[in-house]
Image (tube, rainbow, N blue to C red; front, top):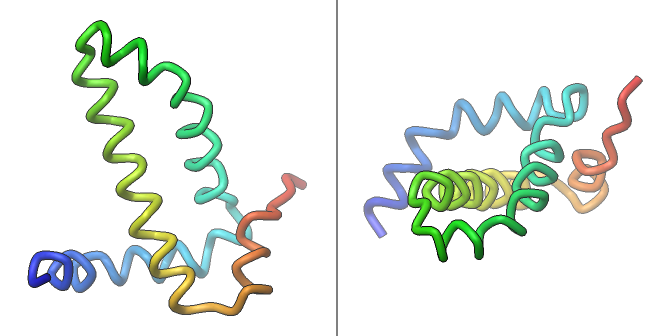
Length: 89
């Protein structure tokens, strides 16, 4: 859709920067780990109507999806694997 195209155009420079720096920083893997660790709290948040937490989880998942789309479209499977095998030095 047109909105998706506008979003991609507006965020391409940020995504490319993350693609370049992520093997050194591990930021994408960290974002995914934080999101997964917090998903256990989503059901409780929904029951308590904690809209802020649900909104934050939704935004994190949206960012992960957008970044993965860029990663998958711009690199090979081997390169993609490097982004998820970051080890702190």
